[in-house]
Amino acid sequence: MNGLIGAPKPRFGPISRGGVTVLILSASALILAATWAFRREPAPDSPSATVRLRAATPPGMVLVPAGPTIAGTDDEDADEDVRPSRREFVPSFYIDLHEVTNREFQKFDPSHRFQPGDEQLPVSAVTYDEAAAYARWAGKRLPTEAEWEKAARGTDGRRYPWGNVCDVRKVAPRRKRSGEPIPPEPLRTASAKVCAIGPSRLQPVGSKPDGASPYGCVDMAGNAWEWVQGFYNGNPRQRLLRGGAVGYGERGCRSYARAIEGDADT
Image (cartoon, rainbow, N blue to C red):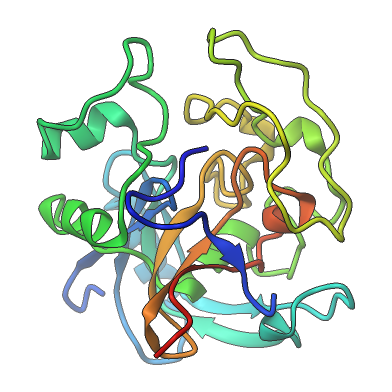
C-alpha cells in the first residue's frame, strides 16, 4: 500500500447529539469512515433513547451505543503504550460501515485521480489534514481512538474484530497489479513489525465480510490504515493510525494496535 503523500510509511510505537457532530475515520494512506458523537457524561443511553438513536441511523452507518468497553490489552507481546487493558466509557456515536472509497472522495475533491476499476478501493495517499477536511465537508469528523477501538472490537476486549484467534481468511489479501487476487498468505508471526515483501495493493471495501466487527464495520483489520483524532503522547508532530493494512503483520491487525506517522522530534 502506498504511504502518505510526503511522509514515511507509518511505524509502530514503542511499539452528541446533544448536538450531533460527525466523526469520520480515515486511513494512513487512506480512508475514512464516519461517526457521530452524542454525550460526554459516563452513563449508558436509556433503552428508549437507544431505540430512537438506532432508528435515526444515517444511511451507510451504524450506531455504537454508549457504554463501557475494554481498551488496550494485557498481551505480553504487545507494545507498552497499549498496556494494560482497562475499562473505559464511550458515549454513543455512529460510524461508517466501510472505508471511504475513491469514488466517494472524488465527490469532495474532483482532482482526485485513480485507475479505472478502482472506484471501490479505499481512498489512499490521503494526509490527516485531507481526511479531516473530507470529514468536515461530509458534516462529520474523524473518530477518537476510543471510538475507533470500540467500533472495531466491541465491548468484550477481543483481539481482532471477529474474535481472539488470528484468521488470515478474514483479512483482505494483497491484490496483484493486474487486478487478479492472490491466495491469502499467512500473516506474519506476532513478532513481525515490518511490511511484507511483494506487491501491496488494496482490495475493494467490504471484500472480507466475515472479518466484520461486532457492529458490522468491515476492513477494520487490514486493507488500509485509518486516521484517528489526537496526537501520539501529545506530540503535535505525530499522528495516530489504526487497523493495519495489506502487507503488514499480524500485530497490525490487532484492534488495540497503534501506528505512528510523523517526526518524533519536538
